[in-house]
Image (cartoon, rainbow, N blue to C red; front, side, top):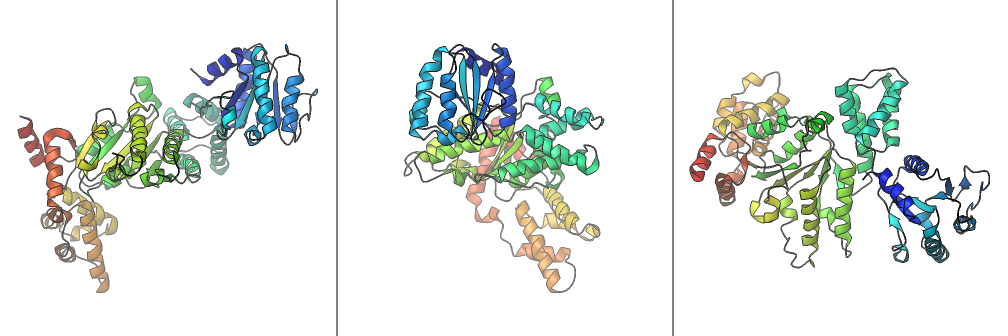
Length: 504
């Protein structure tokens, strides 16, 4: 049921007091005016603390700086006179005993009258004594249809035709923003260069960053990494590239659901976090990073409230990528011992959202210790796929060395013996390969010359890779993947053959 249908139903059912939390005051008032015409063309009265009632000569200024008088005006109107009374920012007065009492009195009187009071506020703040008489409604953010219509309206003034592909990308990037923010950012683009260009997607994403900066639960993470920056992991990259257009309107028309997310399990330093950033950049979606530790507060119920706030914020900014790094550490204490069950309740709220969410929030969770993850996290339906990210093969190490050296020394890349470097660094992760190059650069810099292949090999000889210091953990992960519990991120022929033998 749409907002218009639900609101008209409440009007016809004589719900006297309606509370709608939204920052989009102007858009909501336009929607209410539309609904008012559908229920007998009722009059709409608007009140705020500074100007009182407006837009009606008979009550101009009534109730100015007097919220109680604003309610008394409703009470004095004849019972047969219909109307919708919009009270802006009225949540600030609900704690007042006289206001609270008057609202409860009105709730009784208006049940049989064609009158409705609508409180518009930026958030839900309802005293307990009013919880039974106030009906809270959600006013959703603009739909793709509304966003597209607004963009076309703005472009109509310029006469600029916009291709379907660019229009679809702008609409997708603008989802989660209010119409006012969309107008503001597109007007800025038009004022800057007179038309909408593909590069303007970044301006739209910057508006989303502004929204994120107002919360301390999620971080808007800048993502400049590309799919090509990932060395190896060909199976995972192929899977991602096939879903590059899965958030488009064309995909919805085709019947495809929104992708749900990925769980990347594997050894530290193998590119799991890099993959999350590359997904965001490749799909032109904002990357939100969740520090699960910020969800947990000291007050009773605070953690659960923060979890719901995180979910609401992520969905408001959708489509987006929600990156949860090292989720195994966050929910390791899910049994609830020692914390009054807080971790268990937060986990329950989060896992239910993963299973039931319909919004285009693509969740990328990474984990190093699969044993610490609750079994519910691995159940089908939480994520689209679970990938195992193991140590890179020699061929993948060549690709990783090439990626780093191409970025650092693009002009003399051929002077480095990449085949030898890959051969001499068995069991090295991608992060450890990067560290060997950094160390080699220190060697060359200290001697006032460029670093060489020998410098990289010398640096590698001084590093003890994690594969040798955490052999048991890595062996467990490899056995787990070999048992068919996850899909391989790499085209690792040796591990693939092992999996086939175990499955047969």
